[in-house]
Length: 497
Image 1: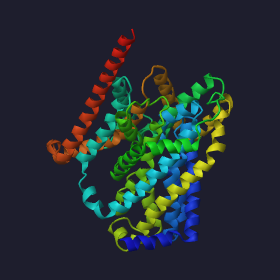
Image 2 (image 1 turned 90 degrees about the vertical axis):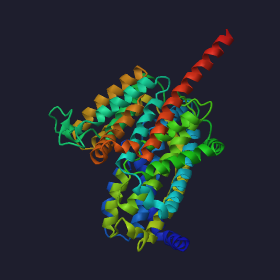
Image 3 (image 1 turned 180 degrees about the vertical axis):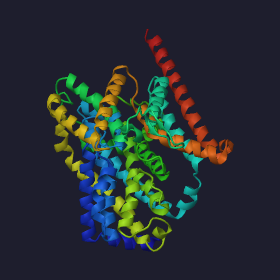
């Protein structure tokens, strides 16, 4: 295996393949910069161009793009409070407040460094998991996958701050919106009201942009000045890197979480950053998450790049896409004359190992390139709100429209955007709604498959019981910690009197 890895390294370092990798990196950063686009869109754009290409060249282009999409999406998430892709939603929670405090460079320095580390960890994990992948993936059937979706949904309460009940209700509302359209288990349509557009359900990019970006647009228009209120950008890039090094255990732990979640088919990248963020929120001491805590940027950014390495394991070895991006990657393999499955560990092992090397190199070069672009791009935060909002609204509407190329996308964008603004006014948490929406179809599908196959016996599965105990621990532990913190605050108040 080591000899094959060395051979793959020499192949990847060939000038023509390096050139295609850098082309993919530039495209990936550009796709991440534009709100509403995603790795799926970028992969779709590149797919026609890989037809007939040498597999090493084609994979250098595709993996180079995929590796850095979740690095480039940091710019709009931190500077504008708008998710560049679905994998950068949690970064907004603390990245945008830091930008408003004039610490955008610090936040992005930490973000890009953690993205680089997470991507490298994901690439190494892909290499190490190859020999052990088959028994691990075969251990996860529908009951275990259903419990993993429940684990993701349990984050709804944890991310709700001082009101878990509001978080749970918000998560249920997300489940309700996610259930619009065709049912996964029976031949019927729900909540379509006779609309052909709604029969396909509501698109994730539309919901993500509406629930986060639309309220911020209204807030920016109502408040005069720029995002930073003309504060100088302080706390430079290196300070963010030093912050990451000080929290090295959080970086590594979040990267491992991202790799493991990517490894499980079906969860995808839309929830990985929230799980890492929620785990950090409950384990980091003396945190001020949601108010501009740099550790709230470090955790999700370490996880979302690491996820790509994990999701490539089921994709390459079993033909099971871990996300929409890897689903299109399967098509790219076919166009280049490759076939996902055991052959990727046999005759096509050099191609598989070249993907590992490309993933590592692309994350390193992509992060360094983004760091070089921080200062010029950070100047966006000084532009007056009334000048930047019209431009951003055009981008957002185009981003929503490209989901299905239907006017219904724009109508749903405005409707859910108004709901998001109402939730902002009433101080209801928005992240749980998005988590519920993302996991709605997966949870329902895995539940019905489990019932049809195993009846209720699947509840006695040891892995199911183990995941259930983790969920119970997270929920009860979170509630107990909130009560403890309230009692400490009340005692502190009494003592001050």
